[in-house]
Image 1 (cartoon, helix red, strand yellow):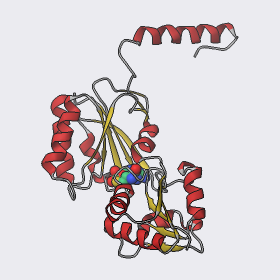
Image 2 (image 1 turned 120 degrees about the horizontal axis):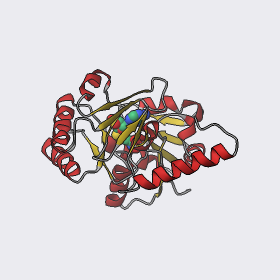
Image 3 (image 1 turned 180 degrees about the vertical axis):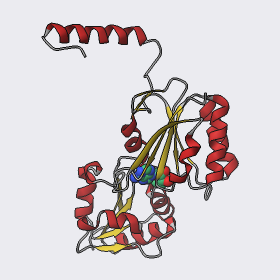
Length: 267
Ligand code: SAH
């Protein structure tokens, strides 16, 4: 019998342009697709004629188990997460089961565009220096541990991308912790349903983000700038290092001068 294979893949935020070629190829090659209902819906035109398993699939280990069983039947299986499969996705549950069971199944993990990157690019360049990604889901991690990570990332002046802001109290508490270390003027980008039909974004601040709390749901990523992040119009920019202000000014001047001398207007 043919040896089964599992592709652990991510579809990106949702839009076709942000699905990788490798993802599309893996889906084409697969006989079975194991995923959530919402994601199955996003890729339904790619899975016509394939076995798509979504029912009763809330539990990650259960999905990993089904995928392995199908692969052991000699099938090629794609386990589909949103974004990237390693980032709070299906990669570790699948690999943990495979590793513990020692099953004879080929496995390949393919990278995808994770929500933090899809969201951040809508604001420009907020993640352009060191950043921390923290999940606010307290289903599998105790809230004290989550808040401690938020605290340390804040103290370390990391830009912070918050995933899974599903518990409003915990989100409020996390933002309060960050506010101990950062000014109320710190830029905050809120991005909901990036790459989907109902995409919505707001650029706000650490002092004012709560006026958008009604919009925040389980497909929202929140990006909190560090002490050097600033806004320029609708953009959020984190400089890559210290002290390039004068150089920036010099280059702006050069661009203006060159533009003028080539006959353009500088305004
Ligand atoms: N593996 C996924 C993350 C899964 S955890 C990835 O790499 O993106 C689920 C969280 O991801 C959500 O609560 C939300 O914070 C974020 N997320 C997923 N899709 C998103 C989207 N289209 N827009 C904004 N945030 C998204």
